Image (cartoon, rainbow, N blue to C red; front, side):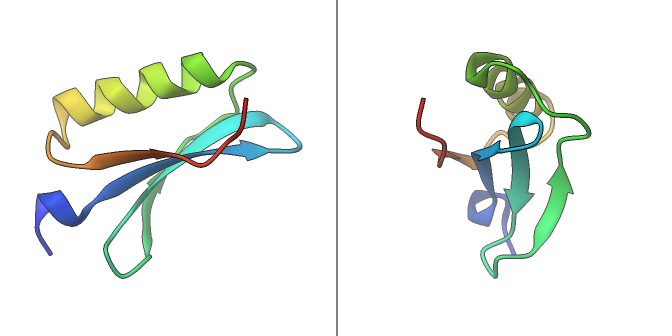
Length: 66
C-alpha cells in the first residue's frame, strides 16, 4: 500500500453531524474522526490539516451532501 492509495472520506453522520475516515485502497478504515462536526467546513478543515501534516498524497472524497 502506498500513501497515494489512501483516501479521506467526509460523510454525514445523522447523530453527530459531519465526520471523516481515512481508508485504504482495500476499504479498511485506518483512522476516523473522534467527534462529529456541526458544519461540513469544520470537518474538511480537520481533514486538510491531517492531509498536510501526515498524509500529503491521500485523496479527499466528499460523500456528504450539504
